[in-house]
Amino acid sequence: MSFSAELRKEANPIFNAIFEHPFVQGIANGELRNEQLIHYV
Image (cartoon, rainbow, N blue to C red; front, side, top):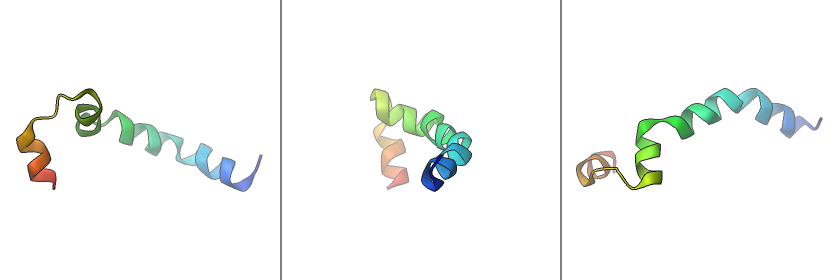
C-alpha cells in the first residue's frame, strides 16, 4: 500500500464525519436554509 493510501485509510473516520455532518448534507441535498449559509459565509 502506498504512503498516500495509508494516510487516506487512517483519515477515513474524519473524512466520513465531514461528509456526514448535517451542514454538508444540507448543502448536498439542497435543504440548507439561506440563513444558515449566510451565517457560515
